[in-house]
Amino acid sequence: MSRQGLKTMDQAQTVNKELYEFKNKRVSIMNKLMPVLLLLCASVSILTTFGIVVTLITETYHFFKVIPIFDFLFGTKWSPLIPPKSFGVLPLLSGTLLITVIACLVAIPLGLASAIYLSEYAPKRVRKIIKPILEVLAGVPTIVYGYFALSLITPMIQSVFGSAGVFNALSAGIVVGIMIIPMVSSLSEDAMSAVPRSLRDGAYALGATRFEVALKIVVPAAFSGIVASAVLAFSRAIGETMIVTLAAGSTPNMTINPLDSIQTMTAYIVQVSLGDTPHGSIEYGSIFAVGMTLFVITFLLNIFAQYIARKFREEY
Amino acid sequence: MEALININKLNLFYGDFHALKDVSLTIPEKAITAFIGPSGCGKSTLLRTLNRMNDMIPGTRIEGGIAIGGTEIYSDEVDVETLRKKVGMVFQQPNPFPKSIYDNVAYGPRLHGITSKKELDEIVETSLKSAVLWDEVKDHLKRSAFGLSGGQQQRLCIARALAVNPNILLMDEATSALDPISTLKIEELAQELKDKYTIVMVTHNMHQAARVSNQTVFFLNGEVIEYSDTEKLFSNPSDQRTEDYISGRFG
Image (cartoon, rainbow over all chains, first blue to last red):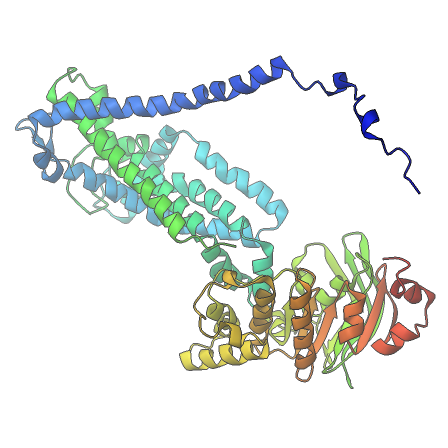
């Protein structure tokens, strides 16, 4: 029995070709134009980065023609404005690191604990309320944090440690830490929430408690995301400016005593930019050298974060 | 065969949804009991009440009772973690941890406080042997569990469950993600394990229930329609709906 509707070759040749007209000029031009437009948008930020790097490098180069790079990197006295002038960056570097370490000591445990709470314990409704509130913390202008440090934290520190000055690294460090908590908690929570339910179920079915599941399954599986969040927070703390300008003082000081007044790299840049230092002078050039140092440190940290994230990725 | 699990007028609600309705059932010790029925009939839900995995789902409410070996498992005095240790579970999708084969099996024992390397080595070996995986993996225990095939991963999950020394093993459609050959291996494994363990399996596959189980329970819309010896249920069901389902008229 032959099938109905089966055409012979002769009939097949009478296809109405107008029905199969696929060309559309307008669409094909748009298809070619769109990627170019999008690339242009993307190149704005690429060009900006490039511009920043070029400016930093040229100005830093001029600075190092006058001040030997060795004296800059390994000098232990930073006195750019008051003679005898000295441009050893170590006091600024140690001040910055002191702040950053204090901030991370505050932010990483608290941020991680809140992330674990949010991802493993909090009922949906609670999470819906707490997460936005935490993220509001990230939106508070840093100048407000600066005053918070100066007018609330510093007096508290002084009442505990009588020897603490009005400006001290501890107060600024704690508040920088509070500022970066949302960064740690939010990114870590994202990483933890991405751990599949089936892994948790597997552990629960073996008789693990909620805390054991959080600590021994979820945290290791989300480890790369957690480390990335911590390193990002670290580099954010290094770059923080306003809080340290207000609360940590402006005394370049090679110290690890958190109760001392110090100066960070960023605070120094603010100090010189706001002052009446003439354009083109060596003091003026020094802010680019300091800026370059900051840039290199955060750049290396970001590479480090990516390396860690890749190395410790547990696939699931 | 003595009844090990006694389910008495169990009702379970997810919010407003009445997922299990007046379920009463006994499950014999050291045998395989299969739960069959169309999707959404409550068979997986009932399985997950046996190790209280439903506790994790917010809005779940339970009435009635489940006793295992005489102990009411939903009473306040029951320690859920100990219960889950005694009632192991294997899931639909193989879910090995992102760790080595060894660490996967050793995970449970470590969790419950075993630290001695020698003891752990022993547990890992016996568990993998019980799960008939030892010969395939004994030379690369340190390799990631993700390098194994789906069927091997599922046997690894069985080994992981056996490593904490359970009495009961729940298998939630444990072969539905596997190819026929791996499925057959798991079925053979279940046959071997039933000498030592009480196995309760949920399956989509009626033929699987007919092949491997001793007792079969047929669910429909959250109710137990019928349960009896597998042979009787498939050859001479007493309810018309069971007959319709096993002869392929629906589901």
